[in-house]
Picture: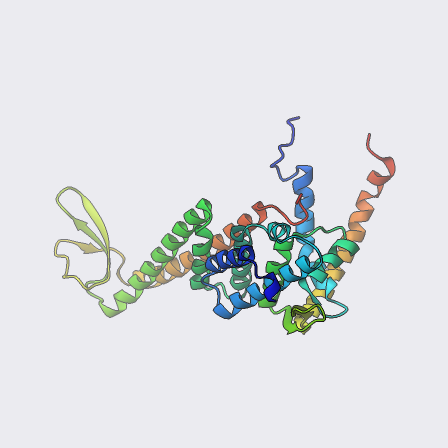
Length: 200
Length: 125
């Protein structure tokens, strides 16, 4: 295998490895070994290193194929927010739209978690947690409290125990919705890239 | 009628590329039906036995994805050429899925052919 490890190939694979961070180390090694074998096969059949590498695409393009393909596969299997965020984070490093999608997804998940926490906080701190309506001299302020602060004197708690089912439904709903939208966005992103079979 | 932009979904290149893209998973599973094969061999087979022209940068991520979905397995095998090759083979789930896809394709293409038959006869106006 050493005959194909030219500096050009090593540089290409190094750049690819950097962009595949976040995938399991064993998987990355396997991917790189497979591409190394591909390059060896092509060059020993007479192709130049240059043309072989450019047929694979830039390390950025290839990494994004792996990361988004991996994201879809994993999202289809588990739909775990952690995995989706992890993969979106990688797309965000080479695409502005990906960055926006990452921000939106983080916001969606954060709000979802806050709503769920609000529901649990009510159970732990029945008297101080909840959605409070507090007059503050100028007008009225709404504040979602987890119950660690003091009893907000002039305020009035709005939802009562309703915050438990509402928080759970809204929170989990938002988390599921965010996951759906993120997976949909990644599918659109995949479809928007040059398709296989398009002009090379 | 406004002209079709090159970026539109119905622009000839784009439409055809979408159509091919949708077939790629099925074609790759079909290429493994008769036994194990490695990336470059699958690629050549798709090019010679179907109209699919697949980028080299597309087939490897696709195979990785099929593997993480449990449709194929992979193993490293030493070859006469001096470097090991990563061979893929269909799992039981992969065989089942491939057969389902083939059936869907057959039904779909025969009814679509019926619908399209008059167009092929008359030719373009």
